[in-house]
Image (cartoon, rainbow, N blue to C red; front, side, top):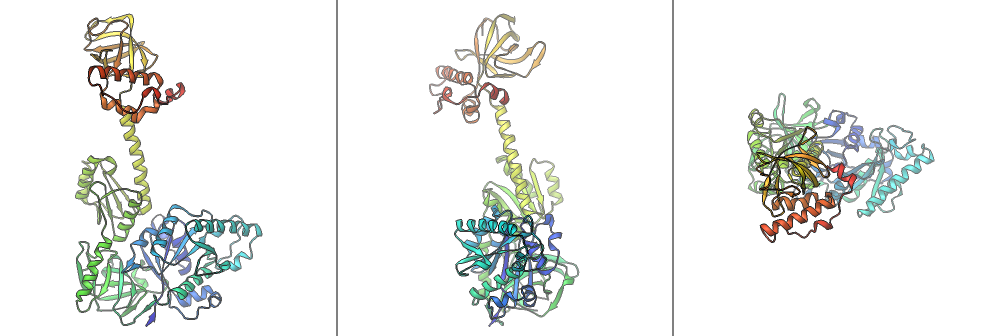
Length: 613
């Protein structure tokens, strides 16, 4: 038996310092090269024990860690969303986790979600209270322990830090966790460790790494034991083209040993099993990131878990990122059945109506789907690959059902030429980005504006309760069309509405309105204008002094209550009651009957009325 390195995942809110933390440990600048400064693909880095010892110094001895671990193996994810997609049979791929947060900002929505994931997966974790160097007055001491750095701070600065830390302690308590600063903990078994750090300056990293090793040594001794001669098991991070190598598979091994020329089994995009023979094993050099170029890799004949490895093998075109990887040198049927049993765990649920989702890997796809699911956004289809003509057609079908679902959300993929051509003839919208959270934010913002636009269109289509009076001695033409001076007694009169009399008989349609020679599209209560009424004949359909109502159907009548009920003046509400009585007498005794009495609704005052209209 052999002890492997614990696999550590770093979770937290966007921009709270996940990748910067690892950059400081390995002395790299991966964070600066990421799209938008945000990690977009899962990476992996091995931190050997000698590097950890040089960083931690005497803190390892203080923790009384007697058995030497090989080191720590870090997974750097695109936020907490990918944490749930990195799995091995029986649970999370990560043995430990760091929940990182900005000490000056405290808990954010993604911090809470990450905490809930850790709680449900029962993954041991420590809290890294990052960005202590942003506390006003903090005197940074690069690459020192927190213990040393805090002794060189002004007492007020230390007090401010303690206040922020106790806010974190309070929040964790509300979430069901007892916690304390690492040097004040009385019981490591029952309390969550909080380590103040600066990922940028390196302050506090000795204590953070020491606490992780302490957790692993204390509680994961059995879990970290592997048989050196057992077949390897791992998870595929990414399948990608490497110059001079062809298609390669970035993989994290969490158990066993992987040998050059082993036969391995994985899942394909159509949920089939592929078996292939390894040609080359490329191991990242210590402190190097698995996502970097091949010049940072060394060819090897054997890899022992836990480790990141780039595998060169034929026929891996359709292997799906996120797939389990198993060694099966004898074409083991049991391994094949085990892989197939995991298909259900990575299948994404879809709906009859929803948006179209595309991404470049299964991990990205599932991370994107998890975010959309958490926001109750239904998904019609979710697939890996570039946007195709079929995706555009499916989105256009969804657009007919509901405008907000007539979209394609695409992470890190292109639009195929045939899809571009189809787009010209459709009204759907495509959201493309290389930052997952930005995609969802852009879509949600668009949905809000789309809802506002739809509401405005709906409101514009609703006929408002209105009535007019024919002013005596101001009938200018008897017919074709009839023209008369009118006074608007309530509401707003718009061109094109139909007028009825008090008996419910149709009088005619408002053809035009003028005021001192100016043509009007609409006019409101209290105004007096000349109105042309097509289809109406004076002394046949109306008389001087008659009161006429704007006609509406029952659907419009009920919509007024739903959309404008609290935005109507008292005289408009009375007009509604009058119109309902007319309709009930001439059409249906139950016409417009709802549980609302218009005259009892809250109404607008005069100033609000002017603002609204």
